[in-house]
Image 1 (cartoon, rainbow, N blue to C red):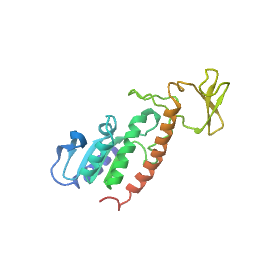
Image 2: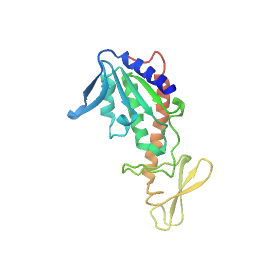
Image 3: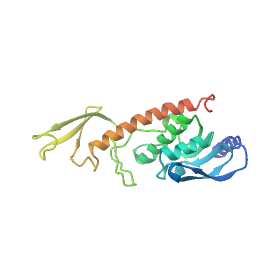
Image 4: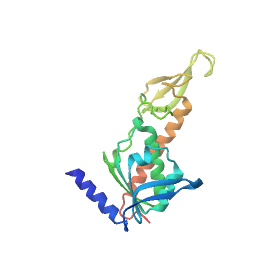
Length: 208
């Protein structure tokens, strides 16, 4: 079965790390630690949830990347607006490993090129950030009505790539502001960079 084959491949990669399997506490800046449940001399093994369902940041991922030559991540899902914050953390994680030239081995639900999808305009995150993006927004905004963008009689509109217009109220479409839309578009660019970096990290010559 394919699941058993994947496990065998991951176990082989883990064994290359050398030493005995153990739990390890990796020090992070400001006196914090990351608990690694499965590690050996030079390899760490995580689930996607352990890395991205928790409020971890760049400092945590950098500490992992600097400590281990190889990092295994299993159960990686396809990511879109349905898991926006988790996808954002995964991008930061990839950046940390890329800068440290750490090998990354992932077991994903979909091929590498299909990991990141466009955001869905109707989806909210569940951890309080209430961030939503529009998949086909071109970034063009304009105001209709009188009195300018701050007037109660005016409405901000966003023009999409297929020349459709979407209303964006003063409080944001489904509670999201234009500033958040701009932030999401920046993250969208970071997704594209992550895809490129994953391709580079897949080369046999990658690593330190």
